[in-house]
Amino acid sequence: MMTEIYPVHGDNPKLRRSSPHPDALAQISYIHGGQDTEGREQTNQGEPDDIIAQILGKFGIWQLRSVLIIFLCKIPAAWFMACIIFTAPDIYPNEEFCCDTSAYGAMDNCSVSEDQCSVLVSYGDGNYAVRQCQQFHYAQSFHSLIMEFDLVCLCDIFVAWSQYWHLFGMFVGGVVATRLMRVVSPRRVYISGIWALLCCGVATGLVNDFSLHCSFRCLSAVSCSLMMTAGQTIFTDITSGKYRQGVMLLYETFWSLGIIVLPAIAVGAHSWRQIYIGITSLPFIIVLLLPWLPDSPRWQLQRSVSLDAAVEHVMNLLHYAASINDRNSKIPHDLEIQLQHLGEKLRAQPPPARWLELWHSHKRAKLHMLATHMALATFLIGHMGLLLNIRSFGRDYLSPNTMVVGVFEILGCILAMYLTFKHNAHKWQCAGGFCIVGGCVGCFCWFFTHVERYPKSMRLLYGCFFAVLPKAGISCAQAMILTCMGESLPPEKRAPFAFSVVTWARVWLLSASFLTVLKELNIALSLSTFCVLVILGGVCTCCLRTPVNNEQEADRQQEEQYNDAVSFNTHL
Image 1: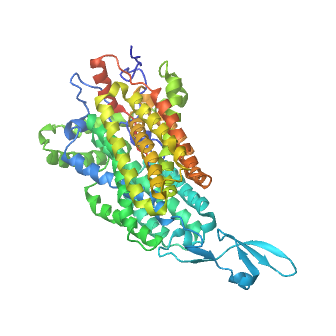
Image 2: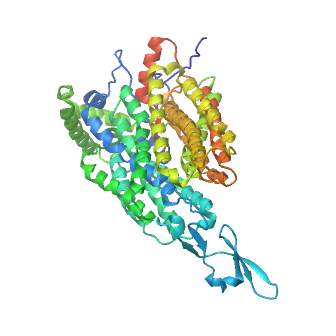
Image 3: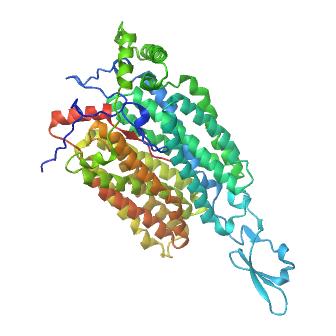
């Protein structure tokens, strides 16, 4: 079967080239675009002629240290997103709470419903009225968010509402970060985000009003987005080649690591406030590592007010990095002059292509646009929804189920890395097929919802099993899409394409928390809804194609992708 060739016009000097500056990043939260900041021609040996890349190398000890510091921001971001699983667990009526009927007079005049949410009050002479219970008595050792604000009767609705504001904050944070990085360096944006997270995180755990709690959750999400957007801008600028793509694919593993570690923080807490104090502790450690956080060298050359000051700053950074990577021999004697020329070139870059031009990149452009938009939207909804849906499988199994989901997310990212490097030509079909199979397996949950002969623990174990397979498929395909979605497009069209795809997906992501409310009708209904979305995303992923001609052309295009591709990061 012949593989279709997509024309790539990135080397045509007559066409516009996309700006190498992070301004091309998609304007959203922790899902954001990091356009290649190099934008360079390749030599015959595939080595870029950018002086910064020549000195830093593709990857080294200095890049590894910087990447690990940046990766740490994913852990508190995962904690603040998923903490609602442990701060607002289900609470059982009669056993753990009951309605306080003292406000309605003597107990003989009242009759409480089985769910303890409604009170039938007798006013004598056969007159009755149904009142909504406003106060409750609790008999649970863990003081949850639900108990704090008396939300037991509308628990799932208020949990979804709280999570909505977190997702909205992630979206807003991406926009704010992108706008800020037009005038503020990525390093300063990252530092601003970590300090803002410290303040907002503590405030979220101390407020005594649910509306204020949701507001500070939104601000905490904005802070996380600032860090993740700026952080990815930095590490995509200081790495290159296959190492950059590997770093992008592995970025999500630290998010999953945060999901795995979260139960360890929650297990010893006696109230939801202690959980918030616990998840705010790691940002203090990140603050101690900030002196070793580098800035984006190309941002400095392109966006700093003074080019001379930017050149001096970048020179110091390159000398320091070269000494750690043992590449001092790569520093030319005219480094300052070359940096001056590079800065002038970056500042003279024309704007990227317009959005309407994306529909005419190649003859499959329309299908590529529709498939990518649909795939990422369904994957993001499923990614967030399946994680929040863990609450449906029982309060007693929250910790192990959460850890299992985190492990399968990591396995999905590793599978994406394997497919990208070892089966690049058919990676989309492999990832999409995995999602289709995982989603179909998840839909079998309907056969186990009414099997009473199994104990409850076994039924809940089956439910978790049906959830983790589609979760692994989502992690695989989502990481691949966010890293390689622009490979079939010329460089000047990748930034607007990435912005369009991710913005569309982030808008639909806001519905993920409300879809979990379907568990009130049936646990299998909410789980199968997300699995159907996984299947739909898998079908759309199978429609994508990797542009390959022959072995030599594939290697050349892959090297271009490493140096020019738009990359993204998901989670929330």
